[in-house]
Every structure is written in structure tokens, then in C-alpha cells.
Amino acid sequence: MINRLVVFGATGDLNARYLLPALAALRAAGHLDDRFQLTCVDRADWTRDDFRRWAAEQLDRHDLSSPAAARKAITEPARYVRADATDVTDVASAIEGDGPAAVYLALPPAVFPGTVAALRDAGLVAGSRIVLEKPFGEDLDSAVALNRLLSEVVPEQAVFRVDHFLAMTTVQNVLGSRLANRVLEPLWNSAHIAEVEIVWEESLALEGRAGYYDGAGALKDMVQNHLLQVLCLVAMEPPLSLGERDLRDRKIDVLRSVRPLTDDDVVRRTRRARYAAGRIGDRDVPAYAEEDGVDPRRRTETFAEVVLELDSWRWSGTTFRLRTGKALGRDRKEVAVRFRPVPHLPSGFGEEASPNVLRFGLEPESMTLALTGAGAGAHTLAPLVLTARPAAPDLPAYGRLLLDVLHGNAALSIRGDEAEESWRVLAPVMSAWSGNLVPLVEYPAGSDGPAAVRGS
Image (cartoon, rainbow, N blue to C red; front, side):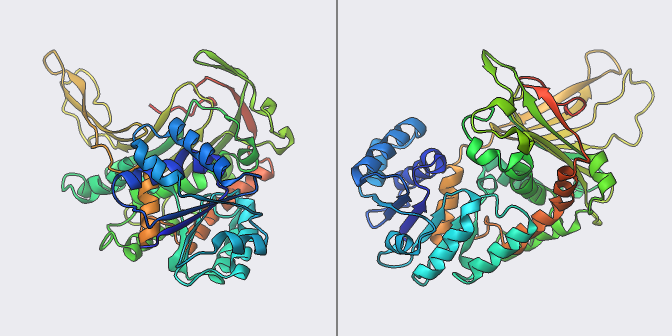
């Protein structure tokens, strides 16, 4: 296990909201001891005491579960280094220390190439690992170039392209439910499943993230990584094991099987939109184009929907609908597996049976199965919903990911060829959207989104 973590971009939102609380949770659970060394690196002109005070404030704000002693054990020994993440001399000072380190790039993706080049020239200790947040590159060409640059620094096994969705309990339950239950696996194919919806819709608006979001948009921020990763777990063939090689090989098989989209397909099967002014709950929300830090000329979308098909024996004939949106009237974050109707319903029932739907709630975590049962009257049908809630996870998603990084377990990390294949899937969409083949429409903040997209 590696006992050194170096975080570049340490005064940013990612460290404040997720990494520091995850480290406190790991300490509280006994996964980290006094040998663990945290080095936080940023351009802010802070002293070590300035950073400690800030980190303690962030933990008080964002970590409501870890005991005070665990939080203090993370913040008090932390080292702070003021550095330019692309300057070789600065980077060399930041990563110095005994033994290998896990270097976490909590930075804007545009800075990744310069930082990785600086790490290469500064000289990482043998056995070190590099962790990169999403999105990995900005398109297929940049992803290929970044993979090539990383290969000059550390071997592929030491590169962790993390996606915290893969460590969420319910996402893991997608695998467990379909692979460990005899009642589901025989039905997990196009003969029985008509459509799978993978949805991440939220009432949150931009919330001060213009610096990153306006250069990415909904397609790159959510669909290209998070939602495609969930698609892989839903659609993959059963792996021989949950080990690194078997799991990743089956995931890339799914991406390779996605039917390429033509321009006509993109027009028919995708939507893009951004929110206009509106009201969400008791707050007024300005139009996205009027949010601080937004450049309206970029025409960045806050809503994206892509419908895909897989050219494979198991899934031919099933549609996969990936959708995400901001500033909507309600949160809907789930995987909805919609089964086909029964082939024949005996005459005499007073109504048609509702389709069966298996839902994996992503946030909050839950599982529901909508069936059809007997109604109150003779020969009547009525919905029957079975609900279960998974046990609370022992660690937050980022805690699970950091522990895997420190132990060198890359099973939930994204392999280099998988990152490139994800960009290949969406390259036709990006090209058609940049050519305005699909109009950028608007929807009022607080609404259900653009017309004719809401699922049941």
C-alpha cells in the first residue's frame, strides 16, 4: 500500500467536497494510520496554517459523519506546497518525499497534459501512481495524446482514470442483481428488455461551476464518462471474475458494440438544450446564458440525451437512452430497465397490464420492481411495487476509490483504450452538434426539460 498522496488543485471544490471527507472516512475506518502523508498543492499564496484552517472548515461543512479526531488526523500533518502544476521545478518540490506516491490531478482537464509532462520531467519515484478526474481529454485525439504522454511516465497499471460512479453502492448493485440472481440473468437480454434508461437529472443549476462546466457541457460532463460507464455495467457479458482484467475487458466489449451514429441518426436520436430563466422551488434561477462566467457564444448545453443501440447477440433490438440535465423541476437519478409486455394476456382482464420496470435509484440509493398484480375487483389488474434499500456503504464513493488507488486495485478505474472508445462512441454526436445539425433549444428552469423527453 502507498502511504503518500499528493493532491494538485488542493484548494478546489473536488478536494473540499470529496477528497478530504473521503480521507477522514478512511482514517476513521482504520484504513489510514500515522504513516500516511498528505501533500496538498495549489497556486494559492497560502501558508501551511492557512491551508489547515481552510481544510478544517471544509470538513466541518462537508463531512457530517467522521469523528473530529479523524478529521484532525488528516488536516494537522498535511503539508501545503504553493506550486504551478505545469512547472517542472515546482512539481519536483511538490512530489519530493520517501517512497512512491499517488499523485491526484484534481485539476481542469485542460491542465492535464502540462502537469503530466512536468511529472515526467521531474521524475516520479518508481512505483508511483497517477490519478486523473473526468473527463479524460476533450475528444478522441486529445485522449489518445494524453494516453501516450502518460505511458512515458508510469505503466498503464499505475494510471487511475477515476469515475466515482463506479464505486456507488447502487451502481455496484446493478452487477450484483443481474449476475447473482437466477431470476434476473435469464431475462437480461433483448428478448425480454425493450429499453434501458440511464438518467441523471438534477434540480441544481450551475452553482458557480462556470469555469469548468461552460467549457464542457452536459455531454462531456456526464454522458461521455459517468453514463457510458453505467451502460457498460448494465450491458456487459458476465465476466469470469470481478478482477481488473476481466471486468475491464467486458466493459470495452460493450463500447465496441455500440452502433456508430450517422448524421441522420444524431438528428433523430439526440437532443440538446440549455435552461432559460425560471423558478426551482422557492428560488429564482437566471438563464444559463446569464450566469456568472458563462460565454453565451459557446452555446453550451445543460441538457443532453443520446439514444444508442448495441450490435450484439444479447442486445440487438433494445434501446439504451442516456439522459442528463440541470436546473430541472425534480431530481431523477436512476437506471430504469423496462421489460417487454407479456406475449399474451388472457381475455377477461379489464385492462392491459402495465410494463414491468426494474429501477436502480442512484441518488438516493434504492431498488424498486414494478409488477402487475390482482386488483380489488374480479379479473382486474393493479400495480404492485416492491421496494428495497441497500445497506449503507461502509465508505463514501471517493473513499472506496482512494483506497483502491492506494492499494493498486484498478478494477474500478478506466483503462486507456476504454477512455478512447468512449470518445469514439460520441464523436459523431459532437461533430453534428458543432455543425448545428441538432438545434440547441431552451427549457425553463424548474420545468421537466425540453418537450417529449420525460420518462415515466
